[in-house]
Every structure is written in C-alpha cells, then in structure tokens.
Image 1 (cartoon, rainbow, N blue to C red):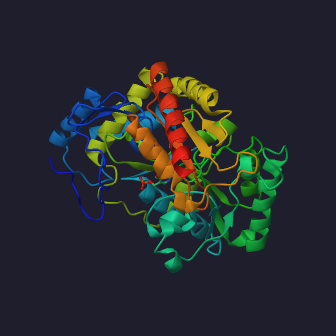
Image 2: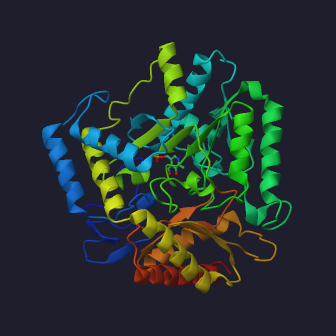
Length: 440
Ligand code: PLP
C-alpha cells in the first residue's frame, strides 16, 4: 500500500497508515490498534465506524447528490430541526452552514462587520481576539489567531488585529491560580477596548476553553460573565468559537454554557458531524439576521457548504448523541479522565498541570515545576511525547503555539470506557517519562 505522500500534506516518514477505524480505535493494515485519545483532531465525538451514519451518507448521496446550499434537502431539514430542538440556545435563531471551521470563522466575522454596517455604524469594524488562540487557517482566521507557529511564513503579510491576553491561571502574572486572576484578565480586555475605542470595535472572538493552542486552558469562573458584560456595555458582539468545544465536548451542549453566558454569534464545526463529514456552523441572534436582511447584504454561500450528505451525517450524529445521552457521558468520563491523569501525573516533577472541562483535557510539561520554566523549543518535547504515546498505541494531539509549549490535548470519543481511560493515562505517563529521559 502507498503511504500517500501528497504535497503539501507530506506524511512524515513512519506516519501510521490507517486502513480502518472502529469504536475508539484506528487500525493499521497489520492489525495494530491505536487508541484514538484525540478523536482525530478532537472531532470523532461518537466514535468511529457507526453504520447508521454511513448509511445516511449513502442515502443522501444517492437521492440528493448536490443541491445548492439555500435549498432544502431531507438531510438539511433534519439537521436544522435537530439543531433547533436539541442543541442551539433559543436566542440563536439564524443558521449559516459552511464546510469547515475556518470558513465558519470567516463567515462569523463578516456577519459581525455587516451587522454594524447595517445598523448605521460602519466605523465599528475591528475584531478583537486573544493572544493564545486558534481560529483557523485562512488569512483572516489566521490573523485573529494567537498562534505564531501556524503563522510562520505569512505573519509579515498579515494585518495583525488587537489582542487581549488569554486567561492562563497557571501563569497569571499575579501568581499561579491567583484569586484575582479573572479580574486581572478582564482589566486587560477593558484596557484594550478603551485604547482601541469601543466605537471602532465590531466583535470579540474567543474559545470558551482553549483548543490546541493552549491545550484546554480554562479561565477563572468570573472571566466569561465579565467578558459578556464588557461586550454588552460597549455594543461589541461576543463571538464564541466553539469549533472544538461545541457539541458536547465540554460536558454541555456548548462550552460557553459552563458559565451561563449568551454569545451573539456561535461557531461550530468538528463534532457537529462527528468526523463523518466536513461541516461548519454559524448561529446568530435574530437581531443580527434581521439587520443584515433589512440592509439587503448578501451572505454568500460556499459551494460545498451544507452539503446534503454532510448534513444527513450530522443529523444522524446529533440524534446518536441525544439517544445515548453522550453529553452526560462526556461530563462523567471527563471527570474520570482528569482523575486518572491526576493520579499518575499530578505529582510528576515535570507536569505543571492537568486541566480542562468535560472530555477536553490538556497536560502541560515543563523543565521546572516550581518556576514553570519550559524546555527549550529546539528540544521538541511535544512531538516527542506524541511519538512516544503512539509507540504505546495511543494517539494524543500535540498542542501549544511555539511560544506557549509543551502540551498535549486529549479529546477521545464520548464513548470512551474506564479501561480505555486507564490505558490513555498509563501510556501518557510512560511517554512523558521516556521524553524527559531523552531530553535530559
Ligand atoms: N476554530 C477552532 C477553535 C479550532 O480548533 C479550529 C481547528 O482546529 C478551527 C477554528 C478551524 O477549523 P477547520 O480546521 O475545520 O478549518
């Protein structure tokens, strides 16, 4: 079998070749089973190999191969019905469907700028975002991302936007997990808004819990309610990028619900179709939809946005999550994963923190646990841990931004068992020990 070396996605020598995936495992031609502790790229929320989803894709492809996005197909109708009934907060009544997360981010930012223009405030067009973040790979999504490693070679061509500090309780300048950390980061955001001029700002975009850029950095509890207040006070739209945290990943339908806030725009992707098909989602408030509609602005579709087969897959995946109560499972197994990791790694001399929410968990590795000094970038600690874990038949997702490093992200399917959780924790302990031994 060819190893599929296609520029620019050039497989590193020795990359796994996956012939089949079933349940929580990726299976190589020789039969080796790799436990998928990252759900691919934190995507496979309901696990691999669900026949009813494959069947739904087959039926949709047969019956409604391609239909322009604004028209209705059975799969689209079922998906929207399910989103409205079981998933989206009631105030987010307008839905725009893309074919991935970056496209959804671009669309959300366009909608935010359009909304203010439609409301007679075209000067409100700046987008604020955060220093440690990832919002996608297209030019504007990359611009608003706080991810130096993923901007290498293009950073000089981007018009950087204003960024507030990402709340990072472990490394808060006031002290590790300082009780005033939330207020510290809110003050930072307020200062940025005042420096830029609130009359120039359209929106603030952020992930409720950090994705791969910060590996599940979770803000203090007063942070998100404070952000929502600041945005409301200054007529700045709050955009929650939930491409990674959405659709049950954090033990709630959406991550922002951990803090009871109401974003004006919600972005989803990844878990929406559980990896069975590519999809992205932008849901906005009725007020935003009405203003843009009244102004007659066109919200252009992507040719493959809301593809009929992808929507049919999503409808099936969303039903599975409800029928099997998988959001509750994500919350429960997330706690179990945190406990298993803490038990093995909580006192490890090179583990600074095990953190996260639901089944989005991150582990940060440092040279010195007391000072939080990281290993040198050249040591390549993250890649080494990922490889060592893979050698132990467990796939974990390497994270960090280069500046912020050595961390891995875990995001297994919500069906992950207690035994599989033990396997993940054991493999990670071995992988970290082997990496430290190699680096030392
Ligand atoms: N936003 C967040 C929070 C993400 O984690 C990602 C991808 O990892 C994206 C946006 C971009 O999504 P995609 O890779 O589907 O374009």
